[in-house]
Structure formats: C-alpha cells, structure tokens
Image (tube, rainbow, N blue to C red; front, side, top):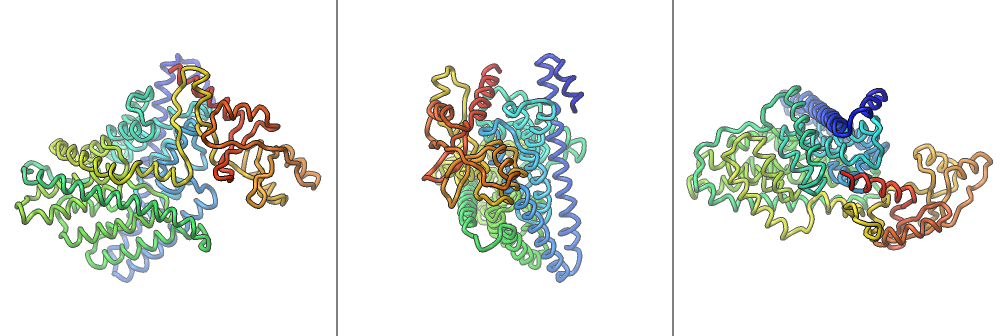
Length: 570
C-alpha cells in the first residue's frame, strides 16, 4: 500500500484523482457484494433450510438462530462500537459533515459482522444502510492508507457510499441521486464526478460477481389501464402514511429504549429478535411464508406478482411493520430501505385488492399499484423522491412504471411534509443530540469566524470520570487522545493531559487537573477561538443545559480550516 501511495503521488493531480476514485469504487463495491453474499449464505442455510423440515423443528431452530444471532451481534456492538448500530446512513452523514469523511476502522468491521448476524440471522432489517456505511468507511480507510489526510476524506466516503448502494441494489443511478440528495445534500456538488464513477464501478462489481438480474422479478407490465391511475394517489397516500407511522413509532421506541436501564444493553436487540420470531413463526405456520424474517425478498416478489391472497398480504404488512419497528428501535444493526419497500408494496397491494372489485383491475393494474406503493413509502421515510423513483425503476427494469412512480412521489412528498419537518435519518441524528451544520467554504475570514462552533466540535468525546487507576489506564489504552475533560459526579471539574495521567499512574498519585473553559453550541468559531487561546490546554468543552456534550480543540479548528481551504480550491 505504501508503494502504491508513492506511485500515485508521482502522477498529475487529475490522473491521481481518477485513479483514487476508481480504487474507492472498487473497495466499496467489493465490501457491499461481500456483505450481500454473507447475508444470503446465513439466511439460506438457516431459515430457508429449516422451512423444509417439520413445523416443530422450524419453531425451535428459528428460535435458537434468532436468539444466538441477536445476542452475538449485540455483543459486538456493546463491546467494540455502539455507533455501529442502526442503519449506518445517519452515522456516515455525521462522519461526512462533522469529521470530514473519516470513519474509524473499528466501525467498519463491527458494522460488517453485526450486520451479517442481525440481518442474516432473521431480524426484519435491510442491508442497504449497512452496505453504504461499510463501503463509505472502507473507502475512507483505504484513502488513509494511500496518504489522504483525515480532513480530506469526504470524497472517498461519498464515492464509497455510492459504490456500496449501487452494488447493494444493482441500482447505479439511484446510488448517485441518493448520495447527492441525502449524504452530500447538493446535486451540484463538485464531488458529483467521483460519485458517478464510483457508482458505475460498484455496479460493475455486482454484475461481475453476482449477476445483472433485477432485485425483484416482475411480469412485464404491458396492459395497465386508466383505472389503475385513478387509485395511484390513494395507494401512494396509504403507503406514505404507513411509512410515516413506521418512522415515528421507531423513533419513539428508540427514545424509550434509553430508559431500559434495568436490562443490560447486550439484550436490547434481543427484544427485536424475539418480536420477529413470534410474528414470523405465526405467519409461517399459517401460510408457509418467511417474509417477516430478514429481507423478505421472496415474499415481496410474490406480492408484486399477485400470488398471495389479500388476507396474507395484510398480515405481512402488519407483522413486518411491527417487527421492523421493534428491531430498529431496540438497537438492531440494519437498514430501513428493504423494509420500507416491503411495507410499501404490501400497502399498495392491499389498496389494489380493495379497488379490484370496484373498477375491475387486472393483474398489471394491481402490480402497478404495489410498485407505486414501494416508491411512495420509501420516499415518505427518507425524503429523497428522485432516489425513490429511480431505485424502483432500476430494480424492476420497466420504463412503463415511471409516470405512475412520479405521480406517487408527488403525493408521498406532500403528505410526508405535512407530518414531519425532517426525514428519518435527520430525526435519528437530532434524537442523538447531533445537529449537523453544513459547512460551505467561506469567502473571507469574517464569514468563517461567524459559523457556530458545532460545525467543528467533536460530539463523541472521551471523558475521565474517576481517579481509579484501572479506569485511568483503561481510558489511555482505549483512546489516542492527548487531552481529557474530567467529570466527577456529573460535574465538569477540569481537564488533564495524557502525559500527566501516565506520570500520575507511574508514581501512584492522582493526576493534577488544569482549569477548563466551556462554550455553547451556538457560540461562533471566532468567540471560541479566543477561549482556546486562553485555555491552558487549548481545549474547550461544549455544554448543553449545563451538561458536557462535546469538545473542541485548537487541532479541530486548524483541521477544519485546512479542509475548507482544500475544498475552496476544487
């Protein structure tokens, strides 16, 4: 890797940028394809294989698998990296905007393994969110190995994310729009060229290794009628409401789960796993369908092809809604794309079943409404209408669906804005106490100093909370930070350097604390810069309601300025 980095440095800037982007796309695509293959292998050799045996064997075997995978994945999350829980898209968005695209290697491998266990082990979650997070993080780490500094990792993170989504769903166009709409949040970003190239490479990777088949198998829709279009707004509205309800219920449960202090965090995801198991077993014993477990793609294909009775479709809708809500809200590791598509398809199919006797809808009409429901539900949750249209179109490979998808996206977008100010991912970040500030390179020093300090602060700091030598040594071993705020009984009392802690441990005395300065999120960078100069350690603690929530250092300030200077030159 070092030799490759040296060779790249000898190339002209434009050539080096293209080659680096190709590497990011290759790494991101391989990571996403490997993740997909791993999930499919686990699921096929557990639930699919068990479904061929007796009902009793399936019930017992599926219980063991769900419990084992839920706890094993939770152990990885609680032991190594709690930030790897959830879908990964909010975390990558945070890394892109607040940490200049740097994603720790620990987050990448924990996300990969925990995602395999939770999604492959039956939890009702998707693989696209983890695929984006893993691919973006892997590209960020490869960029570091090739000599790209931490403050220049936004390009590799965005390129890797695009390659990951393109490979996860075999949808390169949707990958481009999603990264630009949701991660970068700028369709005219200077990163668009890198994102397009990486997305194409990610699609090539999945074509070469898995194949070019669409994610869902649909009959060719050739005879949809005006009667279906009469119900497109109704199906879209219903699917959007299902998605909005899912998002709000999930956020409520996620917030409530923080109060489960009597239950160890290791067992929180098990609640989601047991919920899936109970609902999944009930549906399986009644119908022989496995759609509540895992991704549910086989049952989704059956819904789109009109192969299930409406009572079963409704049961799958309700069971999948509850299962996904509890899995994500209780701390499972997985995404929401696939569940939203499933919920939308079943919602659209339910409307189609009710409308069929009224206007004599044919199979093509009913399929059209189910597909529109997929796009509408996803759009309502993630608030990315272009992506929602393109992802369904690319997965189905049918141009005839586009007009109905566009109409459905309009209805979905209007309804989602009535009930929610932000999309699901932004609400997750807000609930975690993170307010993203989208820093645009300023035109002058005065503009830069007027930004809020939350744009450059670290909201995942490491605090010392005890003079106990074991705690002090464990903190030094687990972190590379050079300065630590010290909290005693919930009160900020000072700060200490790494060197002072090491010396104090060596002679068996308590470390000597330095005075510390504090600031609020809304204070400007210019104000906090003066505080940092006056601080003995060049460190300020960000407080909210008198509680420490983050830190900002002179290093953070200089790193941000260097990053913005580099972006201004692009």
